[in-house]
Amino acid sequence: MRVTIVGAGYVGLVTGVSLAVDGHHVTFVEAEVGRRSELTAGTVPIEEPGLAEAFQQHRDSIAVVERIGDAVSDSDFTFVAVGTPISDIGEPDLTQLRSALDGLRDCPAAHVSVRSTLPPGTSLRLPALMGRSSSERISTNPEFLRQGTALHDYRNPTRVVIGRFADTSQEHLERLDELLGALEAPRLRVDVTTAELVKNVANGFLALKLSFVNEVAALSEEYGVDVQDVLDGIAFDPRIGSSYMRPGLGFGGSCLPKELQVLAAAGRRKGIPMHVARAAAQVNMEQQDRFVRQLLRGLPPGGGRVALLGLSFKADTDDLRGSPSIHVARRLMDAGHEVVAHDPAVRPDRARSAAPGIEVVADPLEACDGADAVVIGTEWPLYRELPLERVAARLRQPLIFDGRNIIDPDRAGAAGLTYTGVGRRRVEAARPGDTLVGPRRPED
Ligand SMILES: NC(=O)c1ccc[n+]([C@@H]2O[C@H](COP(=O)([O-])OP(=O)(O)OC[C@H]3O[C@@H](n4cnc5c(N)ncnc54)[C@H](O)[C@@H]3O)[C@@H](O)[C@H]2O)c1
Image 1: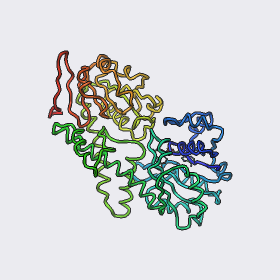
Image 2: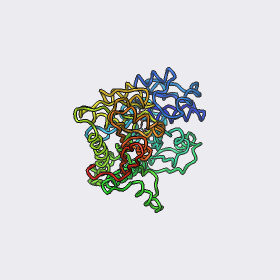
Image 3: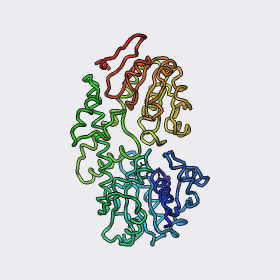
Image 4: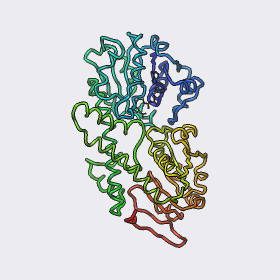
């Protein structure tokens, strides 16, 4: 089929390139000039494993245009994958969605499915926003991919959710089914509001799991136990398990923090307090602040230097949206400290615009030169393998703050580093011949 994808971001590109791999002809409509010109020049503007290679291999069946009308009139199917962020006042910002749908007003015959994540109640307005009196050719198809494994997740979804209106035609659903045909997964055809809530609640539930685990990590620290031992202990219960239960300095990205706010805003409109979602958001902010407070206690009051390893919100992506690591960098610089960062995927100019004043270097060991502490902000695999003796030798103070719990505390201690993780026992730097291992000090 000839498929149009409106919005060449993380979801749009993964969807479009995967459809090109499946043999379809794909046209991306992208509003941002920088992204568009990179794509036109054959470069993928985001970091997602395997995406650039797949894009290159199927470039002949991929086009990039600026205006929706240039693509859609000639298309068999259109997916909308524009951003639906949250505004500064905690309300969903539908500006991108409105502009995309506005562009579709001149294409009344187009088959359109919205893959963007929509707050509950939004889909019912889709026909009006497209200037249509019928929803015959409209559906929603929320995306569940995870950045970092997005191509794999597109190909192996846990479920395919299709939101339909009462009058969505069989022909439209068949076209959508044909496009998604290669995906083997349970298929849910539900009304559009249910489809929205399936997506909102899935993200919200993951977020609250993480916040609960992070709060338990803080509690474990105060009681001098290792949170991992607690989590291992509860994981035996099959009702609890162990997935998505990794403590850290907080979660970020464009989805999980947003979805808690979307749920809170949806509750406000309907008089449901959504206590749990709001508490999970609050805990996530406190978790990041707690980590910064611990870090600040280790730095010289007059202004120190911190090596920050990892800037993206998670490994295997360059996405800085909502990144706890960026939050940490800004807080440190606000407190008068210098931050020297390394990240294997984030472009330095993007790092500098997300955290003005940050220094970016190309080598993690270089970041450690003369620093008063090294901080692990993202769980990139290369940081698991850091040569800790060499790190210790370069630091002015031998302190490591592991915001992702990826370093073995005893290995750090043996290398001469004092280790602080999240909810883990603190390990003091060993002097030659020492093995100083003990619980966290109560004053910490
Ligand atoms: N990133 C994820 O992991 C993920 C996963 C599942 C669902 N989602 C949802 O998918 C949607 C897209 O997320 P994303 O991360 O890909 O966002 P993104 O910001 O990376 O991409 C959106 C793109 O749409 C473009 N755009 C905006 N308005 C446009 C218009 N009128 N015409 C053409 N292009 C336009 C933007 O310039 C941008 O490049 C969001 O609703 C998000 O919540 C994201």
